Length: 428
Image 1: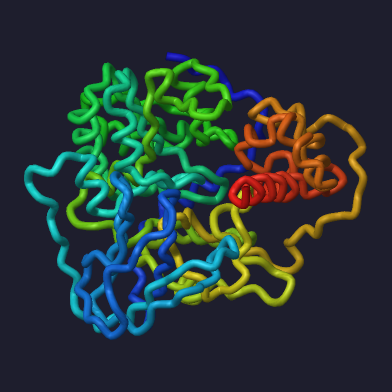
Image 2 (image 1 turned 120 degrees about the vertical axis):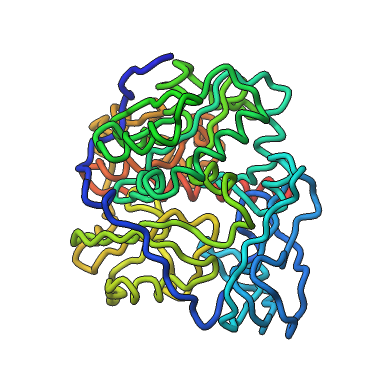
């Protein structure tokens, strides 16, 4: 097993106190808005109608394709609206189901006793919680028959100032243990590895308890973006995963599942909530447990972080690679990894600057790309040139933009290039 230090990336301060803050369960809002795109499986089809009464955990939308993830009502109540065109975090016009909770206590619905992990994951709406959010059932089904030698459960938080994975190990260790047991029974890997933050003793101890004798605890200093799947594969498998269409970690005998997905698999009932870290640039950190569909603004109000004035930002995800939320009314979805708030004075405005060819972005790029070049081609709408220089190999960690001495928004240009190429392909 490899353990080499990650090449590139950035070392950022670790706010140790974030791992010691218990999850606080937030009360239900007056309305839950549930967009019908919650993962990479595409648009779901509603299974409820306006004015229909639903129970907590009831399926409200499904994907007709196999091994996808269903969507469930986070609370009992009434479907007050089915919106045909709701603008989600990415600006996409997607359908959405709006539920008005009635206060009826939720009761977990246990999966069928004979349900295998793949069927259970699909029926319960489980996804792999990362920058990409593939349906967990599809990921597991793809791994079957591949001869998975190493199952990797990743408990490294994917962004600075997010602590939910490390905290989850401490509070939900038994669910993690059961989830690992289910995954091992399904895949029969030769070894199982639980990757954790090496610098937090409480997290390491919780990992050892959750792993037991079934898994090897693999401590890593979380140099950003160490938690990205390809970085994890380098460290644990000693493998360099080429960014070629269709090539995955599974082709090298590994499967990476994040710890929240493992915990969700180890619990009973459908996925109707998320474990998040909410923080700001002033050092306030809160770990929360929140129903899907809850407006981000109501979470901020509950934890006492003021919605920023004009010029500030609410970032869904983390400060390095998250997406700015245009409206605090946007809801938490399965894709929401955290919330980070910047006041107007903390936001760095993109400069109308020219690249000085310092090479810092190249030196620190963990994927060994030339960010200045592919971002420059994207900015000039030379998308074919950007793609020829491995635009799609970029994992969008944001290190290049963070380090750029003249303030060029390299990550945003790279995302723009990808969006334009994909839009062109879809239109063809």
